[in-house]
Image (cartoon, rainbow, N blue to C red; front, top):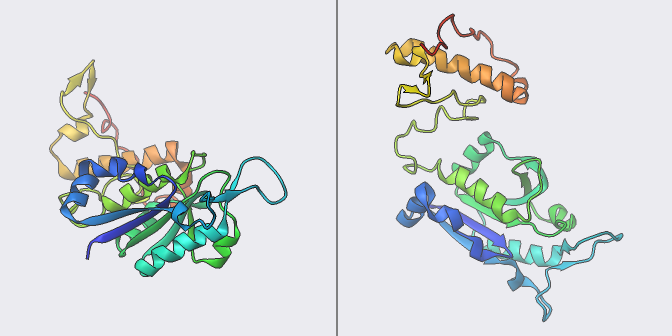
Length: 245
């Protein structure tokens, strides 16, 4: 059975969007996964199809109503009760690669997209929804965040990336940033490809890549290093391994 994604949104026309192109688009056309965008307003009960109301206690903006959202969620789960239920919100847990792998290995996801000032908190108390955030910044709505999550999952589905090992060395797959990449020309504006990569020595190349991944992660994402507890047995680059000549 194909991996299945249902998106609950006020803007179903935003999907598949970029997911209809490149790897994800080809996989969608080939039936490796399916996508359904469902309109949350279809579950409103008044003639204006209202999905939001003013915040309890006062304040700016509007809040998405728990009753309308719950009706949309319940309808999605009646159709696909085995799918993981997520909500895209800046109040959620950070999206990490290990969770992406877990989702990609399952039957699929139902993704609820927030808008306005957020969703009535009682929804999360009443339904088994896992709140997820794609970063420490604010978007106009959860749809863009849902596209990020779905793209991260779809590329891990069997056959989507082609070679089975294509994603193994990429950033975050091993808890480190990926090592730097180079290609022809050998000399570009006086900058040369590092000598280690031109050596033809596979063991030396592997050691260089591992060392650079560790060093770049230390410099750019020390939080990842702390999460790993350091890199036991790590050997810094040997003298000359990172030279450009």
